[in-house]
Amino acid sequence: MKKKSAAPEFKLTTTTIVLLVIAWAIIALLFFLLFSVPLPGKGHPGWYGIATYVLENTAFLGAGVLCLRNWRSPQIVSGRTVWLTIGLGLLSYFIGNLFLGYWEIGLHKSPDVSPGDFFFIATYIFLGWGMLLAVISRQLSLSPIQWVTVAGIFLVSIALAYFLVFLPAKAEASSTASEAPTETAAPAVSPSAEAGAASPSPTGSPFVTTPEVTPSPSAETTPETAPDAAAEAEVQAPEWAIAIENILSPLTDLFLLLYIIGDVFLVSIATMLLMAFWGGRFSLSWRFIAAAAFSLYIADLWFLYAVYNIPDYETGSLPEVFYIFSPCLFGIGAALEFSLSTRSRRGSRRRAA
Image (tube, rainbow, N blue to C red; front, side, top):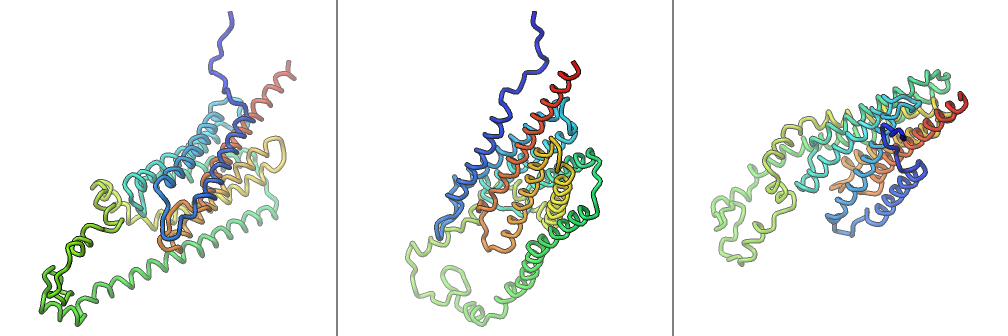
């Protein structure tokens, strides 16, 4: 009588997984190249936003599952806790993206802070802790030149974040604060407003001085029947969503700072990963992990730059494809680590026999 195994084996081979992940990244790149630039005077269609979320969330979910597979394997060389934290980080991003997608596509709103941001911050915590555990497990001893390299990348990443994100954010905040008093004070000192108040128009506006002209029915209904998209979305959004946005809105600057700190930390740890796993059999998988961290940094830096420098920026531009490259690289690294760990342990048992 044959003895049944405790857990079923994973059916897909490592080669198949890697090829599927590469194919997914290529499909995402082609999709962004073909459709990321909207027609002049028009924004992205509704299906484009849905497709980008599907491409991104599928990649993060798949990569998270592959990392958790490593966590469940007792044969994994780099440590099960490392892959547990990395997997939780990827799944946290997946959950945060679900919240953000519901806010943008379901509610047609673009909040400064949404509930998904809490899960995005958790992503940096989990990924950073997992990568740091991997570096500690190697008992890394860097040379002075290597420490200088790490410090240089740390300072460069801080400088990029400051000049591309913090300075534009401060400039926008100061310009908004300076424009607010002038806009509210203008009607009080306007001579035309005083003249219009003496002869009010039939529509009730004190600024219109042509009461003799009878507007057409279409002219009367145009301002009321054609509200702008933002006002329409505000009306359609439920009260609880608006209340959540009002509660979280004061935390905008705090979340911006946390994103920058998280990105700088991931880039620094990724640099140390490259140095810790540069040689040896298991170096290839961790090179992919480091490249995934760099991809996430590039995507975040571009997004924050675009928000504060490009007027009326609409998400889904070409550089955001790095948000899909990042989980794809995490998934490839996890698959390679699983394959090398299982093959290494099998070979050692044969030699012992």
